[in-house]
Length: 85
Image 1 (cartoon, rainbow, N blue to C red):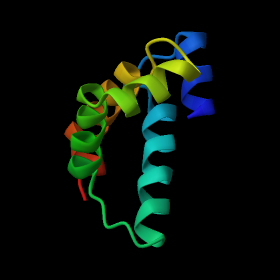
Image 2 (cartoon, rainbow, N blue to C red; image 1 turned 90 degrees about the vertical axis):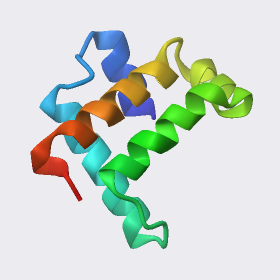
Image 3 (cartoon, rainbow, N blue to C red; image 1 turned 180 degrees about the vertical axis):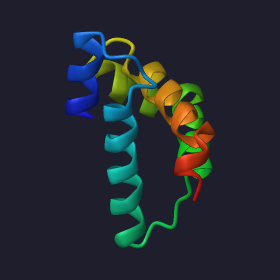
């Protein structure tokens, strides 16, 4: 999340390839550690974060707008045919 917060502050677009790579690495990590997750699953999870007060507050405390940036980035990642899994 620190790298995504830095990217948000730096004005990196949520659909930038560097952001997709970070999400791909994170989803691969989750899968390697017992949390089966597709790109669409991750996008759905980040959408949930926007509705859940605990997760929303946790992300927004790190950087204002981070929860929304993460969700938009996850949606872009899931919509990319090259990242479908």
